[in-house]
Length: 125
Image (cartoon, rainbow, N blue to C red; front, side):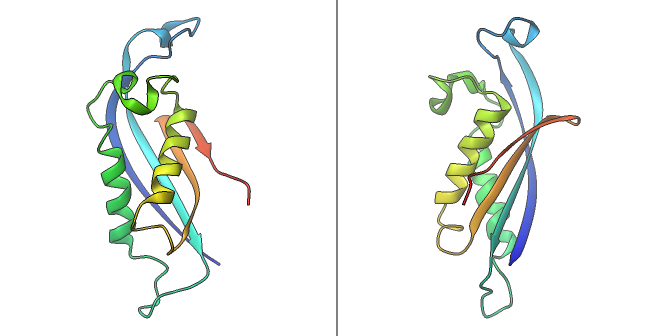
């Protein structure tokens, strides 16, 4: 089995509505996203997936969040844009991306809210 990992980042504001503290206030983060994919079949070049395609898929998806107020975006109109919910959303979007689907599987997506705090989402096989 092979695993590949890529990271990218975006800046965005959010608030955790109903949180009993400062996180209920509008604030921002420089989010870091790590995505790990896996699979057993390499292509004719000896690659699971081209890093360029994996990075491009992640960049495209998180580009929707960059420099936005996350609470106003469609994925978070009915749920708080917590690190957990962002990780789950990115996992599902990445899993369905044309660069990924049918070539490998997403193992997990990890979203770093700060350099010391992260949420990881995966699905059991």
